[in-house]
Length: 274
Image (cartoon, rainbow, N blue to C red; front, side):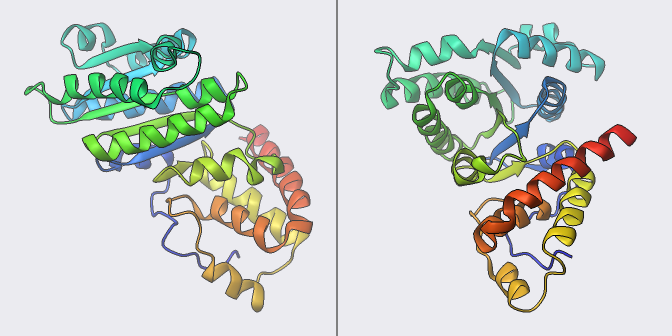
């Protein structure tokens, strides 16, 4: 419970392992609901890159960059020293968006120029072994009402990751238990990423989802099990609990909202007990 899933489910058991072991040219999406989770994940992503001798680019809001700075220091990293050496490069996401939208509309050529300039500068430095880039352009654009523009930026970022062999990481503020997202932004974003991190605690998320499905749907067997086993997914790697929710949205839409509501309750209860 639930049954076996296809190859789109990855073997990593935590978001830390995803961010530590993601190969070059991967494009990772973090779904977050608190700034603490964002800061912890981005700092871990950056720390792993710095330890591996990679250049780390961080493009975010000043508030988020400050939170990431605190987490880096807590992890024993000196962000100022890394910046002075050229290994850590910080930039403001609003300035990056302004450069990519000279006429207040996203210009693919302008965004490509911004991306190319940042990545090529990092890659051409012989001191470093590769490049990692965290950015929240799509998150910023989406939450100021420019959703289509944000998705286009994500597609262009995906192309850049492949072209330059960069490990690209994005954070997106989202309610993972909102059923409307499964028809819109969540589905769209998963389709343009190679890995998805849906929660800060995979075990807690899986227990909440499994319990909710067991109570609302019952045991998954017979034709339902066959449907789950053959579900093709989106071509991205994501934990089985999140993959099962996407499958359930397609297989049993009439019960999906009830499952999400109950999963939210159990997820919250588990968090208060921990």
